[in-house]
Length: 125
Image (cartoon, rainbow, N blue to C red):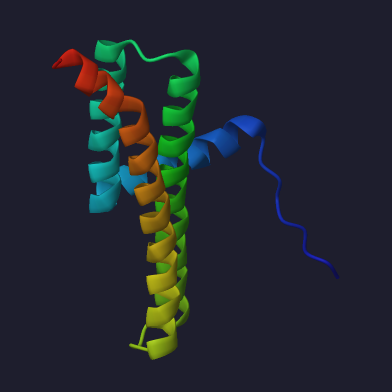
């Protein structure tokens, strides 16, 4: 006998995703830092009147970093669930997942610098 998983409607799926976003924001310090950085970038973007393409880059970078944080958190939770005892291999898995977030955050920072440094430079000339 095959047990079928109950399918949820689209609104339920969005509700679960929203619940996950709230959980991330409440429980993950780094997500709070990334959200504060995003709010700062939004204010800078408004102040410097960045172009649509620059807004698209900001959105893609910010969304990628936040999504990576969510995936990293999910990986860490899963590793802790499956292997609650300290393990070198489990630690490496968590470190590599955290490295993915760091790589995206650094790449996003570089994109931000490429967008905003020329504007800051012109502002103070």
